[in-house]
Length: 125
Image (cartoon, rainbow, N blue to C red; front, side):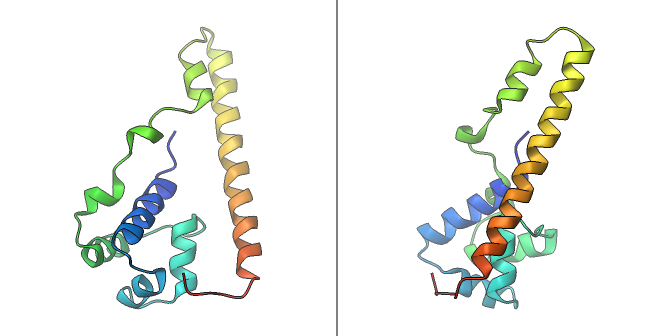
């Protein structure tokens, strides 16, 4: 399953880069601080629909542009590939559990990395 938060963040970051805009400018446009925007863009904080609309307006794109799933990120998850190949319901359930566990592990890894990043002095990017 595609992590939509990561996909949205990736789309936002790509648009910021292509438009030569900074996260600090986005924070100003959202009337928030860079820490909050950083959390949105690294997956430790969900982006609300209202914030998504404001981001789309700031970047001059439709919300659909921010939520699109690129072909490069379409079904590349090995667990999901195997899901279609197994026959027994027990095997499918085991793969679902493995998928959920890997999602949790990756989320907590990002949270830990982000916590470490926040301990480092900020530079305007």
